[in-house]
Length: 84
Image (cartoon, rainbow, N blue to C red; front, side, top):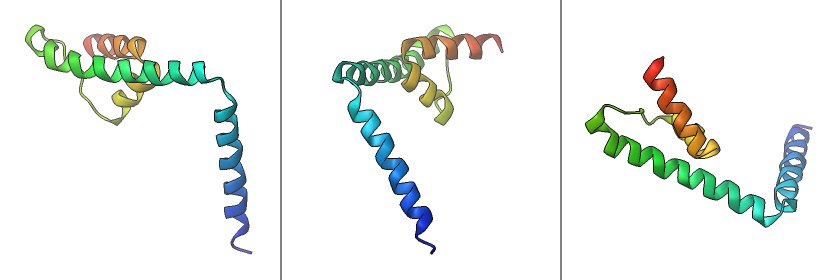
């Protein structure tokens, strides 16, 4: 009886995996590229921005925002950190 939640969880994970693999490859490549560019931009911003006073602390939340939203996410982090 205790294994029923595991079966439900396995079915949900299987549904998510099937949905992801049913996306066109072009969309997946775009998401991966956007996340990679956001991560690289966040690292470059912290490395080069220290001299001009722009620094975004790298933590789990800022990494997720930069990775998920890419360049617009990093711009949001700069504005959020500078003005708030």
